[in-house]
Image (cartoon, rainbow, N blue to C red; front, side, top):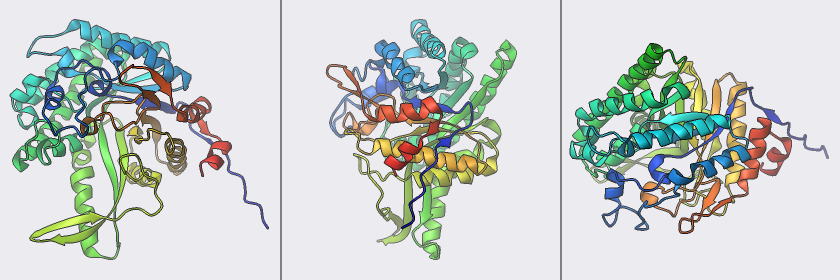
Length: 420
């Protein structure tokens, strides 16, 4: 019997960023915005939860940043809460800006690269009163906010994400009605998509102008796009091919195609791999999804398929731009699948890098447990578990796995064999 050859360690390029991510409303606590108002209405959050104090990251960020150091992570993606900075139209909270500036300094002291997101799903209440993102006026308001934040943090931040998942936010805000303002209006959906594109383009130009004007050095600007790997169930069935193509266009390609000249890197949030097929339902032409064979699932029932990340990165090589995985993770309270997921996603990234794709970083979602939007506190994504009543933290076992990868900038042979 021939012995199976042992796996070889997978070394990543020097300077590769191993990081973690959060967003302001999901961890900070004490926010008053369109989401905190949304949470007050029954039926919007599956467990009836309210974000409330969340993980109290606003007060405990230094403690939470220690976990970054403990895991040898050199990147942290977080967002600025617009409602803290401009709680009322034209009124600026300088104290909140100072707190964010201190966060950036704390990260840099730990040699952690801050990646700052300017909009992550939440608006000040007054923005929604003006029509939210279906109103072109919101673009102007957003640019004013961007200028304020960048002027304050700019010298210490070299990577910005203008928006988080505008493709997802527009659909959930204005088509499905799952997110505030909860409108199901195709015209508002189309206007919001257009306005998000304009907001990104203008923010991109503004940030580059400010850095050049102030002499702050180089800067990279992009946005985080939620990309789903989609394939037809039957590659020879033209109807299956059509529904897969339509899904890719609406979900993946719209924002990428309209922002090619205003992205310095590609920020990719990856969670889903779908095999779609044509389905006729009454007078509606629909599609359905076939489950992946033998794919592990998260606590939310989402299939975990690292191969989809490989395929997405390969498909993006044509843009000839650096790629950062700005989010990837899973809800796994018992930490049974997360270690495997970390190792296998790292393995496919190494594979795609070896094939010439310029992937430069990976940010796990999330550093700590969060308030997970419509799923409330029942979805546990954190490398670090949080008891939301006592606010006690507890690193999950997968912390050791991720720390091993980050410390050595490699996936060891032992990890590959353990989580094969």
